[in-house]
Structures are given as structure tokens and as C-alpha cells.
Length: 501
Image 1 (spheres, one colour):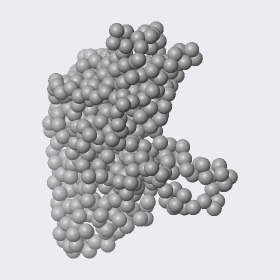
Image 2 (cartoon, one colour):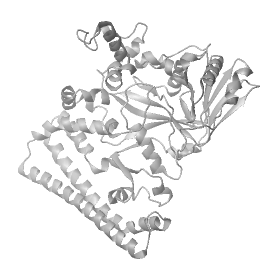
Image 3 (cartoon, one colour):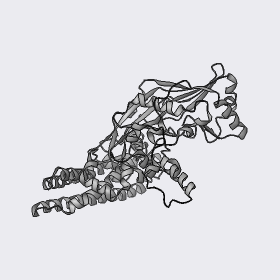
Image 4 (cartoon, helix red, strand yellow):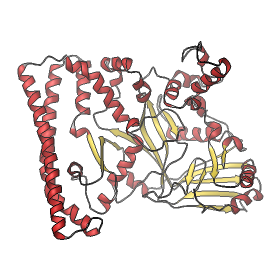
């Protein structure tokens, strides 16, 4: 059963909640706040800060189109850094193809490329030798895979190879720096030098960031930030290597910080923001207030109860707004570079995927949601429901139960108070969640309508819905005005400032 804001007595709760967050975070300029349709858990593990940063990167390095959306699992196609690097490589191709190098400069570049390739091959050789030597040692020592003895010996055996790999990595870094210096000396115009600098940075080893996808590398084997790069190159553990980014603060510290935030929403409150018009979205009425497994009669009783809601209070023990610090492979101004402008014109699909960039991640700890009703009898159905049943349940866009299993804590509970006529759902004090994203617009001439239309199913964007309506009226797409024409103008009553952005 799914009961949305449209089924409640506080139908405008999404706008009230969205407005509260906007005022709390205060986005600057044209920045916006994007909500999550499911407020997902964000693992923060005190004893595994590198794994914690890996989870942060999973959310922060994503393309984004509309709000709210089901973020879902990450994949290589929606990695912002990968799409960005692909575009940079396309834009730099002609520049490098037409570069005029002296024989000496060409020789230096060729030597650097040869040295880099040799170092890469040497790392592969070291990895192979390490693995073969380990397998022979483990067999002779009678160590069996999957046992604690095997895993501990495996980690210790690898240590002597780290220094060798570090030396090869340093050769790659040094030669890539020499190559970059040559091209920056060849290209004279500011636009050419900017393009070359970003291209070289995107392909530099020091721009890469290897992070463990398994927290046991830190909690069990003690691999630290000093050895992390070599351990990743060694291929003996589970790592993900992407263009680097980090949060602006140490995430694990928020497990001990205090700073309660709370807000109560009721029908008497005035809306300061309209989520749907500001995002050109169509999600307000579908914001979920309750979903769970249940019978038809239970669903009817829950709907009746939610129709009698007097207020909804949301609070947390701590809220942190963590900026996304990308390494110097990233330039927010590169989209004005003439080479990038041409590449975007020739490859328009990159426009909508790169126009919006996540600039900060808003994370909360110890989240609580309180529903307050008109009468104590409205709490009866909440008292009788079996919360320990399979599938979990969701309240105010927050999954409880089914979202369990997180490494940083998965405890949750509910409290029913008939005297106060309230039902409260709460996370444990160590459970952290991704509440929202601060989103910056980096390409001025791409509207939110275009982004939503290009990156969402037809029935999940305003332009798509209008197109479907026109198709129903005409029976065909033939003869319809082009996208962006008068037939697709924002609905009457929309936010003018948002439309212009």
C-alpha cells in the first residue's frame, strides 16, 4: 500500500519541507536543492574513513536531472566525472591533432609516453609476481582461502611489494608532468592552454583516487591512506578508482557532533517555495507519506488516519552540509571554453548530463519523523500494524526496515503515544542519511525542463507529460511544434525566476 501527500490533510507538505531546507541551507545564486524521493542511508563508519569516502563519492559523483528522484544504484553511465572526461577528450582531440611540436618537444613527449607505458607494464609484472609467489607460499604453508589465517597472511605478505609499486607510480607521475609542461609551452592562446591543462589533468595518475569498496581493508587489515594507492595497484583487494573527489570535512566526526534541527509542518503554514515549479517537476502529490505491506482494509484505515493529520515534525540529531571538493581535473569554467562549446554543439547529449553538478551533499544523523493526529483513535491502526513484517515500511520518503543492513548502523524504531495523539518513527543515533543535494548549474543555456525531458521517462517530466497529452489529442507526434516552442511553455502560475534559470 502506498499513501501519498495527495491522500493526506497536508497536501502541500512537500513544498513546506522543501522550503524549510532551502532556507536552512541557503543555496547561493542559481544553486538549487534537490530532494531524494527515498531518503537513503549514507554509511559513515568511524573505523573505516576511506570506505566512508567511497560511499560519499558514490552519491556525489553522479549526474542529476530532476528532484525528487529515486537515486538508485550507481553505474558508470551516470558518473559525472566519466561523462566530463569523455567530453574533455572529444574537445581536445582536434587541438592535439593540430599541435605543432619541434623535433625536440616531440621526442620528449614520446619518451614520456614510453616511460609511462613501461611503468604500467612493470606494475602489472609486479602484481603477477606477487600473486604467483603468494599462491606458492600459501600452498606450502597449508593456508586455506576464506579462513582468518589466510586473509591475515595475505595482507602481510603483500607489504614488501608496496615499495616497488610506489616507485613505478612515481615514474608515471613525473613523466606525465613533463608531458603536460611541453604541451602548455606549445599552446599559446588562453583557451588552448586551458583546454590542454584540463585534458592532461583528467589523464594524470595523481588525479585518480582509489578507494576501498570493502570496509574490512581498514577495519581488519589496517591499510591506511599512505599505502592505499599501491594496494589498489596490486590488485589483491576490492578497490574502485575514479577521478578524485573528497568531502569538505571529515565525515566520521559527525557521528559525535551535536546540533539538532527540527521543523513542524501544518496546514496553517504558508508555502515559501513551490518545489514543482522551481524544478519543472511533477512530483509534489506523489511524495510518499506511508508505504508498507498490508491488506486492503489496513490501507483504508491508514488513509483515513492520514486524512486527519494535524502536523508532521521532522528532526535530526545533527545535519552537515559537506561540499564536494574535486581535484584539479575539474574546472567549472571549462564549459565556456571554445573547444568545449564546439564539442557540446557536435555532441548535444552531453549538455543535459553535465549542466547540473552536485556541489554539496546534505547528510543527517538520528532522523525522526512525528505524525500528530486530531484524535487518539487515529493512532489505532498504527498500533495494530506488524512493523517487524517483511519488506519494511516507509514514512515521509524515508525507508525504515528494508533500508537496513547499512555498515554505519541500521537501528530504527517507532513510538506510539495515544495521549499525545502521535506516532514517531526514528533512526538509531548512529544511522546517517542523505537528505538532499546542493546542485549548481554550470551550462547557462540549458533549462531544467530540457534536462528533465532528456534524462527522465516521458511521464516523469513536465515536457514529457505535455507531449503525451498532445499525442493523445492528435493521435500522432507528426505536426507537433518543436520541443521548447510555445506549446511547451511553462504552465501558467509557474515561478518566473525559476523559468529564467
